[in-house]
Length: 155
Image: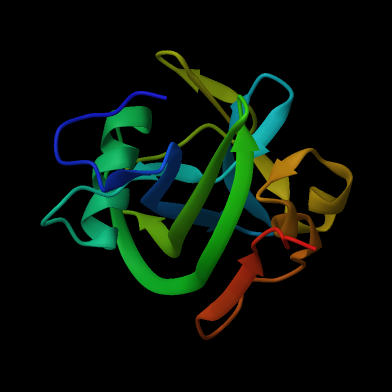
């Protein structure tokens, strides 16, 4: 994990808390996801101090895909926990619906620099290795913001 100046990330007794902003572009019945090895994930990154979540998503799309996106609306507010390399992470993630300002993206899987992206049908998400896990259950995008909780129980 690369930490940059002003990232909203905090060490809490050896565990990590951070704020992340992500965006989804929808084209027909497909959404664009980031492919990393065998997994698919939302496109986005850590939000910075004094940066709105939409500004963070615009920055991430510019850095990773070299495209300009415009925010349409907030889709999900996610309370997310996971363990990575024996370290607990708790994350608040804001997921926005975005649209391309004017750029055109390839219709299938493509690579920009070191990043690979893939268009995935919403109906196919349940059969893919998609993170966060709840995204596998999505069959349509919500019309109003929805709270998603996948915080691990201590039970």
